Amino acid sequence: MVFTNKSWRSGRIDSNCLSPKGEFWNRLEQALDLSKSTLDKRKSVYAVGYKLKYERGNIFLNRRRFLTTCCGESQSKTELLEEPMISRRTSEISPFIVMDVLEKAQEMERAGEDVIHLEVGEPDFDTPLCIKEACDRAIKDGKTHYTHSLGLFELREAICEYYFTKYDVTVSPDQVIVTSGTSPALFLIFSAMLEKGDEVIISDPHYACYPNFISILDGVPVSVNVYEEEGFQYTSQAIEEKIGAGTKAIMINSPSNPTGNLLDKERITEIASIGLPVISDEIYHGLVYEDSEHSILEFTDNAFVLNGFSKQFAMTGWRLGYLIAPEEYIRPMQKVQQNLFISANSFVQWGGVAALREAEADVIRMREMFNKRRKFMIQRLREMGLGIAVEPTGAFYVLGNIKKYPTSSYEMAFDILKRAKVGVAPGIDFGKNCEGYLRFSYANSLENIEKGLLRIENYLKEL
Ligand SMILES: Cc1ncc(COP(=O)(O)O)c(C=O)c1O
Image (cartoon, rainbow, N blue to C red; front, side, top):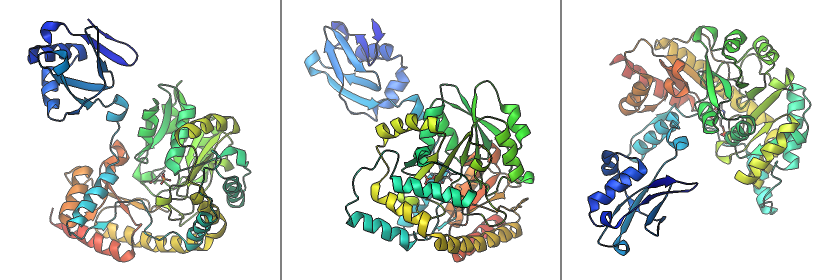
């Protein structure tokens, strides 16, 4: 008999199926409901196994692992080999393709090739000195222990001060959770908000990882297409058409990755007035070159803000971010943080305090350089015939339209890497509606951008 209980799957092995190897496998096949071909295919990737037990003629297999075995004459000679069985949750997650491009590019560099990076979303600037010094001081002063799970009070206060000065909104430190990057903050918000099957509305194109954060927590991402001709802006009408009984929140990201466009004030007002919670990813705030950015908190309190230090303060490797949420959500998210992450790094948080209070001049300097690069990149991409309908005015990305070429964005990105030695991000990473585009990042020096685009121009001429 085969049965499954909470953590063990078991199949009864009678004595006659212990000797002939084939028969034992057949039995396992039945027990695990696998076809022979799966079994054979997997045989080549075995690791020496564990977690099998016999009890009174039953063989108990750890349910989370695939297991096959060669068996000898008796139970004691049984040899176990196994391969981990990957959960549906993990096997269904799509890769972050930009990281795949980056890693391939790094491999080429290790082999001595000269690759230019226009794929990666991280400032090339060094982290401002005042931030590094604050972190140094914190280490020297022994601030190397766990902090409060919500984050250092001093940092939470500095975040509130920053939001008050910049957006004229009042937030209490009790509404803030400091996290190790914005990514864990996304995880905390969705874990507190979503039940199985709950929907979250996101734009398409969108930041590559949003759908995976939602799905891994059993939610369902629902896409609303946004279009180049409209500056990739959401319309509240298109959002409302997708709202159903299961819709839990609407996500916005302005300036946006990958489009570099901003949502204008009227559109945010409309989205806020729909009445559903709005999750606003404000990680590119501070990197806006025309007009100005708005926090969702200027429009509604029914909102969750995600923000972090990676982009505007050139702190990607520090892993520091935060969220601001309605107070009733804080305790539930705090419990998740305590269990999963304990707290963000202590001395890094002191760097965060300095970033918010002392790094304004550095941010202005970096922003001016980004802006020069932005203008140059838009002009060059237009000259190269990769049409840009509405100029992006924020973040550090430009989407180039490659629809006239008979190839997918994925193929083209890897082909450009191979033949032109330039890393670019394929549109498909950012949603189906972003197929037909390549994302170019100007978080690299003007000199490298110039060189990289020239290489791509020559590549395109040869197509
Ligand atoms: C829109 C957006 N949100 C969140 C993140 C994650 O940033 P962090 O480095 O703070 O985890 C990124 C990183 O590229 C991003 O582009």
